[in-house]
Image (cartoon, rainbow, N blue to C red):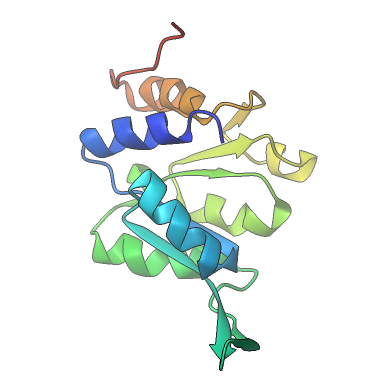
Length: 144
């Protein structure tokens, strides 16, 4: 995703903790964790036995907020400290646990309840939203 590496690098440099919660599988989220230097990823697992798919462990159900709350408490963060960027209706419960909810190229149902809507396909634009909401001056990438 355009801007994801830059946004994560800048947020990490400023001391932010980064988490991804996906209804997808660890085979993808673990790669994402390495590429973006995420502190935590939570997703479902494919189980292989003798080199063949043998099952699935469902760790993330329709209430992704339940999964996020564990780490948020462990990191001792308050609701106001939490920013979520979501696209689908299955992510709506995350808005209940955050101070800033961003609809990122999202379904209309998500846009209806988000604090901010971001249509541009560039995740680094989230930095401008965070700067404005929290009155910060995080670095923002410039187009060369």
